[in-house]
Image (tube, rainbow, N blue to C red; front, side, top):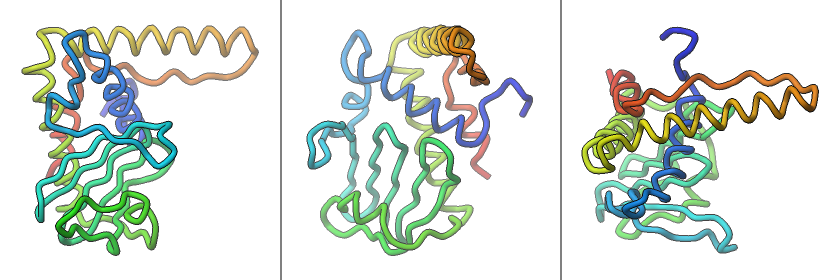
Length: 183
């Protein structure tokens, strides 16, 4: 990776931001078109989206990251500041797991295969957006990201605060970046 590419938690931060764009797609919410179901936390204030194959796999995403749960446990990819981690105590039964329980308990370093499963799910979603979101949807999103970064840099300068702009989102989206992380 070169210095002007998204790395580490920046990549997950950009993905969460893209999900926020995808729910505002001109032709309707791309997350629900992909098959995710919209829900709310108990407070009803924040959205979460989930996908569940009974007894096989559950995926939960929200503004704070991604949680993937199967019979062997959970893996969490936080949006910012922390590395991906495994939650071995969280297990997938017949119903969708309580995300609060899956996000509690001991953390472990995730096994490479588990991490690859999460990256593959993200790459598959991004590839689907490239095929079904519209011909240039990720280009629109990349342009919006650049504008948001320019605005943040300007506001920081006006306030006399240091701001390190985030690298751009590739116009083709993040599918190749996620796929490159799969061993």
